[in-house]
Length: 386
Image 1: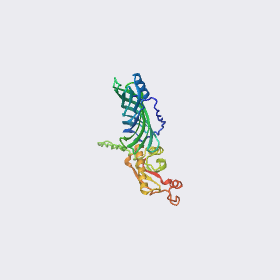
Image 2 (image 1 turned 135 degrees about the vertical axis):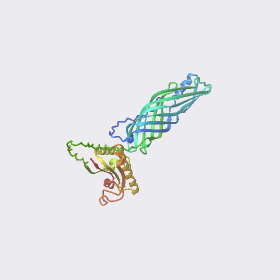
Image 3 (image 1 turned 90 degrees about the vertical axis):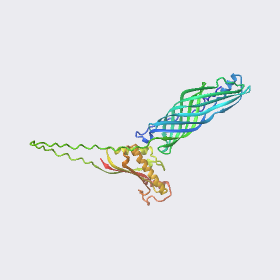
Image 4 (image 1 turned 60 degrees about the vertical axis):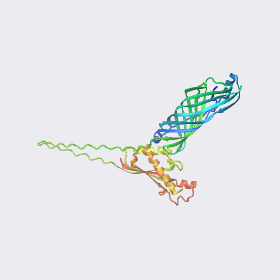
């Protein structure tokens, strides 16, 4: 007798990703990561097949008690090649499933199945907001299925144990919420296709939640060092050799001074509402700004965050600081600019561009929010030579 998994369980729909990313991807979206999930697993026991198997041996089945739910977990690690694709491998334990069948003549047949193994998946990510992303995965699992059977009363079992390892497909969908660049939470629904040790095939589903930790962080870019020119070697000519008149050396090339440059970026184009994570369209604008600096030997870059006057002063100050820091991080990581020459400060609501008489009132209304839009910005000032 054997526990089996119903092939007809409801299918999971695999998330299809059609992703066209900007070629300048965020560096913090790549690299190694590790995580762990735990949750509920489920398989449907094929009671009719158990009943038919007992009937073939001369037993009538009076009742079957199924154990088709358990707790499972997985441990995994992966490498994020881009903001949208990663390869992930890990270990999983889907738990135990089984049944107890009561028979006439009096007896019971007990079956149990334990499933655990290894997997390797391709994981796709689709950003939904600044912190929330959808996940889709497809891969292969190598599951080891261990079966155990026992009987009581009139039921005897001739082969009480069996086990088997075999590769099958797995897939799933989920959501990922980033608390920070390093720590995120995942909610996932996955389906593992497995073959047990006695010829049955079916699916086991797991709904789990867990944490993901990304290793590494922004690394400062080295400042290129200009090589010093070798001093000219002057050789004294012995008398009475004629005096050789050397032409005067060419005048040194003085680098052209680049006038200070200010770029003012709307907060709405960079960030979501009340958020400090740079949006895809904001990343594109910052990448273009970094490319425009190519060939410029800049002395300093100042990043200033500003808010409008709506909301508490302390909250606005903190939000402006976080947004300035986010812009600096992107210029260093994705734009490859020298982080030691970039400063990031928050000005809060202290330097508005609008006038009180033009934007009247303190209550948050759609008209007032629109009027104060110029105040919600990030200013970037560059000084240097070309």
